Image (cartoon, rainbow, N blue to C red):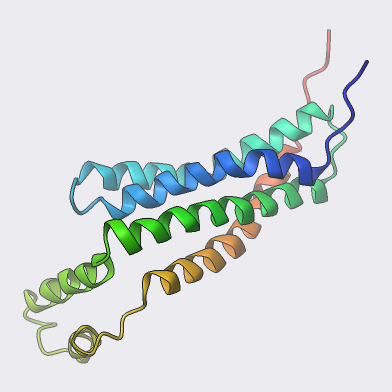
Length: 177
């Protein structure tokens, strides 16, 4: 007996957690890249490979449905994958920023300030003084604010990425012999 066809929502629910763990790895390697520099390269590779991973999920659905998945279904799968994956990743990143690296945001801005101060042409810039005031007055975003900003950015950007990868995932299937 043939298994019933899964909906786009069921597939996204199944694949959302693994995709979220993938996004979490990309984010956490980025957060710890200042402690261990090769992680910056790993983070870059994971980030650049994200469209390929989404394409893989979309193509898998297209093949499992024997080429009868409409473009809108593949696009919806990608959108849902990004939303569900980003929810998982947001939780992980929040826990890391709140409990494991609570000073990360301020450390990064302080590093940027030191870098700007070392450049003679930027030493007296308005940007540098504004950054310093933000640190002094504790005006930088909190971890939860950073996580929410990242959630909306990745979810909306993922919609665009999914639109492109959905077109590619619909290429013709090889003929059965």
